[in-house]
Image (cartoon, rainbow, N blue to C red):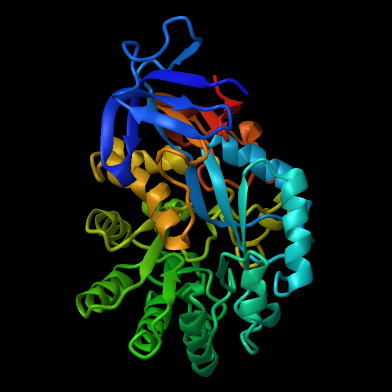
Length: 430
């Protein structure tokens, strides 16, 4: 490919603390050659073809740390091709895949299969995880060493939590020795048993069994206690409550080192949005109170929460259009992750650079990958966004195979207009 010159953009690169008008040069190999205010019409060849971005925002491609794909076993919900199309339309160029497939990603042969399928069918950067325990049953630890050698980036039981403290202690002990990243979905099974939404006034009014915030806090406090004995790379996948934030603050003040994520759903919606049994808003963790939501937003400002994820969990319509108790849990969201996150910028809740950091360089740092920045020599995985462009989320326009978005018909401000992968334009919006 020929060198590409992107000019007249607002370059935002939180890793390098850059927010300035400038440009970016992509070399023949699809890598970033230079970026920032030093790239302008005065110091690039005058006769070369240029892409004028007209002061739109240019950022690194997003890194989504919590994505479910249907392959293998649930291709009717999502596959690598449809996931790629959805991700690129939302500026996501790298995705961390959860292991909750059929069969579960818990052995070397399944990792080989996943990598082949990803290489052949996916257009985005795929980072597979393997389960913490065999078949995500919470009983027997998987072969961390062998799986890491095969390219597994982290270990998680995905939608499940390791309940047995002895098993979890063993996992964290070995993770510390092998430098493995542990990603935990925090929910105590006994306290949340048969729960459907947040425990409180709304659950009582709707006659639905609630899931208390303590169910999340108990697991977080247990695992953070283990960090006193076992020093490992530990990441809380997503938190949802003010009570959990308090526990995390205390642990950080005590000097414990770990990272925390949050779903964009819990940042932008609360339990009142469920209305009269809207099953597309049946999520895990559940939507909680407005007070919880506001506390989560503030936790991003306070650097208590490091990462924002889409928690993209596509479900076919037949699995969602059931009674609330029978409906599947989850929401499609990878293509609206950035636009929905920009709500916090437009309503002046969180600075733009901090939002972008939580979607790019922060997850890259947690994962230990060379993505999420505009460093020279990095692959030119880029996102161009018109942060002021208004649009409405329409079911028929969703590119994911499953249309179970939690924000159907929501008015958003901020739209991806171009996505680059390895220097090539792979998505262009209207």
